[in-house]
Each structure stands twice: as C-alpha cells, then as structure tokens.
Image 1 (cartoon, rainbow, N blue to C red):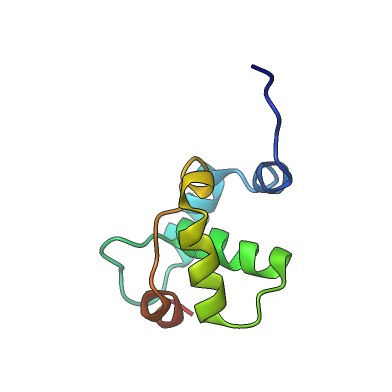
Image 2: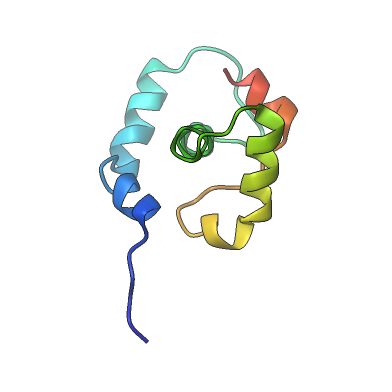
Length: 87
C-alpha cells in the first residue's frame, strides 16, 4: 500500500513536537489539564484555522468526528469547555 502524506501532516512537520513540548513547558502559565495537552490544544486550534471554523462548537464537533484520522498526530478527543478554558 502506498504511503500518502496529508496536507495536515506536512504542516505538522513544520512544528517538531519535542521542541513544541519543551517550549510549552518553559513558557506555561496557568492550570495543568488532566487529560488535555498543549499539543492537542495547538493542533485543534490549527485545524480550526486551516478549515475556517467559525465557532468552538463547530470545531470540536469536526475534530471529534474525524477522530480516526487525527489520532496519529497525537490529537486526543476534546470538549468545548476544556478548549475554551485553555485559551
């Protein structure tokens, strides 16, 4: 089976995850989430920007509906309240 890199994967490759995690740890201010990481928040917000989502509800519904596709980049399911709290 041929391997095809998606556009989302190509954009994610611009942001190395280990560098992102170290910067997030250095500059983190605020509460720590139990099951939600800064990487997931960043990726969900990036997907929202790329896809032109107008609201958090629309964004969260879209990401959770595509869970089998966004699992591999490390995006976990999220709720609207958790995403809104992290901003």
